Image 1 (spheres, rainbow, N blue to C red):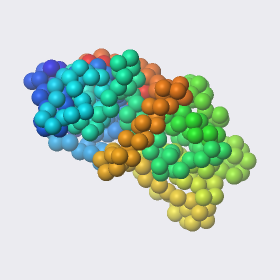
Image 2: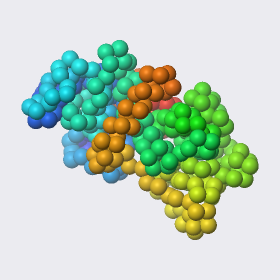
Image 3: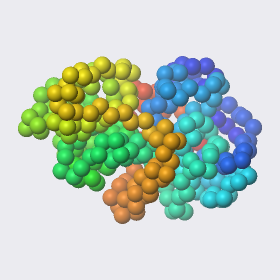
Image 4: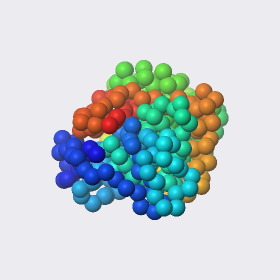
Amino acid sequence: MRAVRCNQHGLPDTLTVETLPDLHPEAGEIVIDVKAASVNFPDVLIIQNKYQFKPPLPFTPGAELAGIVREVGAGVMRVKPGMRVAAYTAQGAFAQQARARETDCVVLPDDVDLALAAAFTLAYGTSYHALVDRGALKSGETLLVLGAAGGVGVAAIQIGKILGARVIAAASSAEKLAFCREQGADEIIDYRNEDLRERVKALTHGQGPDVIFDPVGGAYAEPAFRSIGWRGRYLVVGFANGEIPKLPLNLALLKGASIVGVFWGDHMRREHAIADTEFATMVDWIKAGKLLPVVTKRYPLDATAQALDDMMNRRVTGKIVIEP
């Protein structure tokens, strides 16, 4: 089988595509014929050795996928060969075959679009966990989403609207903001050309947002946090900007605000029963037509480096997938 390999840490152009032996499962595992693998910003960081999860070299990047079960290991009961599944694997998804623990798989209906399923697990799992579990977002509250045109940002817009929030989307271009409008954003902010803090103040009539969803970090974090409302919740989702900001803690005191960490990967590992319930809720939303995962671009396996470079340089909106 063919797989993308990271043989040395570096930028996407250092990746190679190689032919490797077919995979076989260990006890409790399954092997999946990958039909689509989602590209996420942590993939860009992992290959540079800049992420919390640091697999030993060499490795195949890619954290989430969807496909057809090829083989199951000893002790696997719920999943059988031929089933369609989505899986979160942490690594190994950018390949024609991948291994996953049975506990990290979601069985899919036969008619599901596997590219959409691949785009669902990490982005929508992260955003649901952030907004519902960590942020306690309520109907009628105001949600500010930074980096709103990215994968988790779009998921946050959609989930925020389902929960009944007023959603303000902030992004870096008119094209991206138009996309956010299509996903349901009530208001938009171009933070490349507008003063983020002043625009948030105007849109909230000086009250500030109740919840801020921040997967970006960097220079926009402090003005966003300064805009937060009384008892607001600032959700630290990631640092796509590459810079970890230093937030003024005196504002947390003065506004009774909370700075809340969101680490979905460990949430999945430590609190799998809760995560299962969260996914069941979102699947019900999809079946009811309330939630629609969006795939905006698809790449072949040989173009994985280009896909990661496009993600890194923010050339694409929404979710993108590799189709081996």
